[in-house]
Length: 106
Image (cartoon, rainbow, N blue to C red; front, side, top):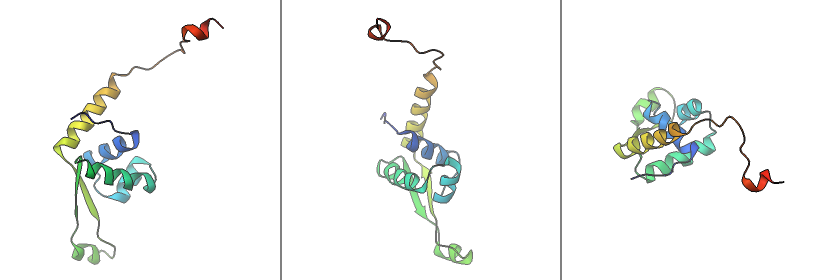
């Protein structure tokens, strides 16, 4: 299925596919604020592009922190990511501004 992904969702999905698996690290890697990353993670999971699991409480406690939620890309997520990247790579830079016919007559 071809999904339209926002730039933020694309960056989050790319970060997870590239090996960044939990919230704070995704925020750091993408440079996006948490208020953008966490809703994107929820939407991507809701749409079946990501899956998640909680780390064992014993591990988190032994490191003195709350448990982390780890995200991974689903097959559908990888397909959507690669489709979006192909679309973006097909665009070429624009070197000059081209006026519309109406603008060029003014």
